[in-house]
Image (cartoon, rainbow, N blue to C red; front, side, top):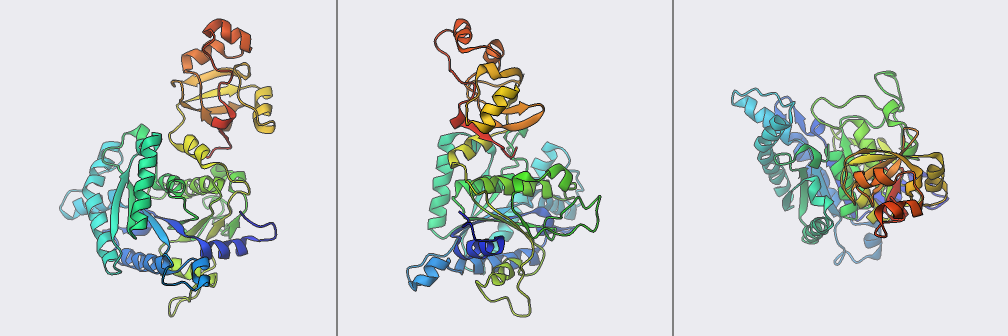
Length: 414
């Protein structure tokens, strides 16, 4: 947690020095060009991550116990399978369009093997073993599968293996997709207990205004409160080869911030950018012939982190429906730490079962998400009613709350 007298530059230097588990995400726009995967880019990134792994966290380095000190633990979230597959097919005379889900899945099936083989090759030069991990949202939705995935990552990191993670595009159906690897990476920050999230992008950092409206907008060196930003106004469109864009990167940073983890957004195509960013904080020397890099955008963590269980329940799946609440219910939720009661609900949308994730709306604005104690059909029967009226309809086997405050995350980044 940030000390009251610590400014963002001090926070950045401290976290970079002390972080033990780091999630690094790299997008298609960084890894690929017109010919497919750019091997010089992959080779450069592998060298940087090898050096980052061997930069001992400050507490270990200061202890002087280098023999027993553990290297940093890294998780790499890598896009590029679809672009690699498309390029591989083109070299064999098959020019394909990958706009539909089936076409993207087919291209990913072609490209995922090439992507992993390329990463394994470049990390082999640094004696870093790698592991391919392909995930769908369903792997993190069920609590037992989430815990199994967490244990697998913990074991890989204990062995000194670098997990290279991508969405399992070949088998994902639309409702089980993360949407983009920025979303996946933010969920892995929680799953792996990471201290730092580094997002490598094709941009130089986060611009202070939509570049389509203000081409001269400056880069923000830091963001104090990412939840306060109007991302729709701030961000432009998505990148041409990826599925994200700055909107999804800031949404991912907002999620990480909620559990107290900062994000460093860096221009991934710049040479030795990670090493230079650490050099700018005095943690290591800059590579020969290059200057330290204090740029990019530092997204500060929230002052009060939410419990990681709430993070999991809020982001384990997309909301299956919405409940609209009146002003009294909104006030109780936002300012009194209350639960959502049937009397405060006046409209229900979507189709969800008991225990489903729903969005809570007031006057068209999202207040948060939570797990509903009632299905759509039952909630429509009791919305707007007092407790004794609910009992008269549903009998004694009912819940006092539609959403208990322990199962509610306000200001969710969805």
